[in-house]
Amino acid sequence: MSFCGIAEVVINQKVGPEHYLMRILAPELTRLAKPGQFVHVRCSSVLDPLLRRPISLHGIDYERGTVSLLYQVVGRGTQLLSEMKPGAEIDIMGPLGKGFSIPDRANRVLVIGGGIGVAPLFPLVQALKRYKIKQTVLLGARSADFVVGADQLASLEVRVEVSTDDGSLGYKGFVTDLAEKHVKLNKPDYFFACGPNPMLKQLLKITRKFGLAGQVSLEERMGCGVGACLACVCKIKVASGRCSVAGVNEGAPIDFEYKKVCTDGPVFAASEVILDD
Amino acid sequence: MTELAVNLGGLQMKNPVTTASGTFGFGPEYAPFVDLNKLGAIVVKGITLKPRKGNPTPRIAETPAGILNCIGLQNPGVDYFIEKSLPYLRQYDTPVIVNIAGNSLEDYAEVTRRLSAAEGVAALEVNISCPNVKEGGMIFGTSCTMASEVIGVVRQNTRLPVIAKLSPNVTDIVEIARGVAEAGADALALINTLLGMKIDVYSRKPVLGNIMGGLSGPAIRPVAVRIVWQVAQAVQLPILGMGGIMTAEDALEFILAGATAIAVGTANFINPRATVDILEGIKQYMEKYGVKDINELVGAAWN
Ligand SMILES: Cc1cc2nc3c(=O)[nH]c(=O)nc-3n(C[C@H](O)[C@H](O)[C@H](O)COP(=O)(O)OP(=O)(O)OC[C@H]3O[C@@H](n4cnc5c(N)ncnc54)[C@H](O)[C@@H]3O)c2cc1C
Ligand SMILES: Cc1cc2nc3c(=O)[nH]c(=O)nc-3n(C[C@H](O)[C@H](O)[C@H](O)COP(=O)(O)O)c2cc1C
Ligand code: FES
Image 1 (cartoon, rainbow over the protein chains, first blue to last red):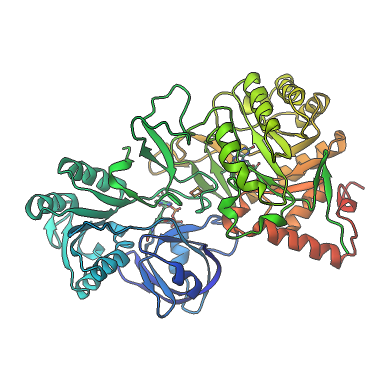
Image 2: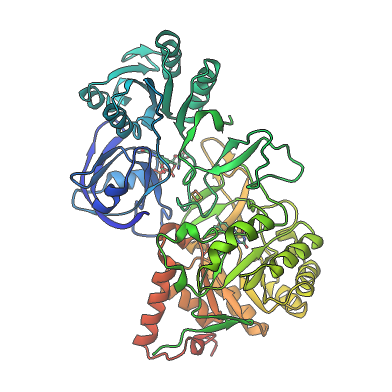
């Protein structure tokens, strides 16, 4: 089930150069929420911009009945979101999608967030903590001021390491380089990741090389958010020998099928995703 | 009491509100938000003989008060639909209209035969107007003889009501409407999306994976209303009107222009309860202005 209706903006504050944190009072939605899921929000009450925007659940407070969103202003929709004042009404739909699932056998987990991809990782880190699973969180960003949430994660008493492209904070280089070092040195047995596609692509190369299993959260442009329009698809490997009915072209080699990021994901098993350039 | 029932070319509907193909999935997607029993009919995503993968992403882009899409008729194929989607839809007391598309006349004929033999299909909406597939689709709908041939073939293979869904991407839609009427269509669905495109000026590349896409949403409403108005007065077939309907007022505009029933498309993405909200709004309008029967409003703007 999902909620769709008007909720109240409790806080909407600037937390980085282009980043905002919005807390929303929506008990019905919160009650159903799980780590890795997202909400579909309207940024305007008029017809332009028309579509809702998908934003991950960054915080889930079951007691207070609030969810929080961590978002980066990249265009008109997110700009309008950033202008909403506490007390304002927001049209919100969710929780949507399939979130992270915590594997039984994981003992040492690597959690990797690139850029605003850190947003959905917070509720995951909290859940891993509750399960008493050892974890290391790697955060990658352009530069020091684009690193968001490192303090908050540190306050959860998990090990956090940061990389920046320009070296202004932590390791100088890509978070995927940092990840490779970790995989070699500390031999984690599972990973979770969210970030831009080029980062995920590089990460999958590394994790596949070392045979490390995990889950990745993907992004694609969305229409409906509920699986009806087929706008948000991503390529998923079709296991050989199995002939999928859902979406195979006549004559085309049976190597992938399109799955919906909004309802089949946004979290997928790392072993099954195919990322194009 | 207000009378909301309409008859769309032999298809009896308890009210005039349906869903536009491709915007409402196969039903279950919106069931958490809408009581599907309340709808006049459900029009499902376009179905082809064989499964189709669809186009590469990005498949959607936003434009002023509209969207461009190039889904490319991704669908699991007719057999999967009959086996997996129809049983779900049969639980509801709402007629199911299946939108069909094909690459060839033989494809249309075979899909028609299989759906006509299945239990729970109330009517066929024949898509001869999809702008997003290379073969078939719109090519059938932009030539008058081809459009008539497709409808003729579907007609020969079914006793179900046949609704011809026309493309607005033509010079003279009235001519095509007359052609498909002669070929045996029972009703017309107007309109499919308008062919459009968007370019990202920073990357200097088209935004959509398939370069061009179909424009839908409020941006196309005036065009759709004009087409319904023209065709309804020229052709003696009931019309399923659509194109940018967001509110009850928008829906009423189509009915006044000559549509017997209306379909809600892009609006579902913005308001998942748009269909039932629009139905409620139509009822309120009728009560407020003393309209006893919705059919009184069909084409009421003509004189
Ligand atoms: C499941 C999911 C979860 C997400 N979670 C978050 C989050 O927690 N925080 C956050 O800041 N962002 C998140 N995003 C991305 C966010 O939805 C987009 O940044 C937003 O829709 C952009 O809207 P806009 O109007 O500001 O920008 P637009 O003007 O629409 O676009 C600006 C730029 O953003 C890109 N873009 C637009 N839509 C998307 C999209 N759906 N996914 C990726 N890129 C897009 C465009 O290509 C363009 O370059 C998520 C996306 C998905 C699919
Ligand atoms: C994402 C999307 C998918 C669509 N898929 C189909 C389809 O499979 N078959 C079809 O006949 N029309 C399809 N259409 C067209 C709609 O049914 C409708 O004719 C059009 O969108 C105009 O209505 P609207 O402005 O209310 O959306 C699609 C439209 C959208 C936006
Ligand atoms: S956004 Fe419509 S199917 Fe995913």
